[in-house]
Image (cartoon, rainbow, N blue to C red; front, top):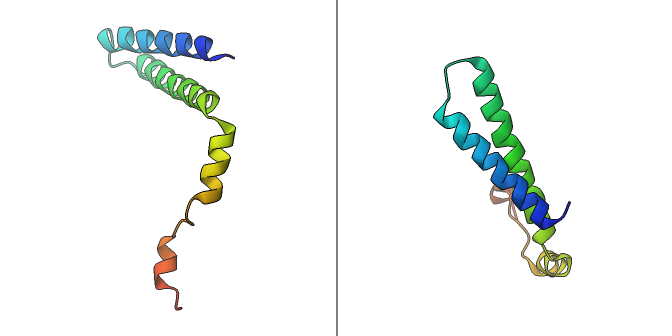
Amino acid sequence: MNKNQLKKQILQKELQIKKLHLHQSSTDFCNQLYNSLVLEKAILKKELENLEKNPFVEMVKKTFSSKEKLICDYWKKS
């Protein structure tokens, strides 16, 4: 998928979510449909975010970033 298709699908999901939110009833079906649309939208946004990443920049960031400290590292004896 390309960026424009993903953006279009994200907008469609947002529109569907808004429509469901306006007509939301207490039935399980609507809640499940609402939750699945929110999840699908999140997946599409993540795909778009991954497409927009520059692999070279990510490699440089990873190379020059400091090592992450884990909470258990604070209790290690030096």
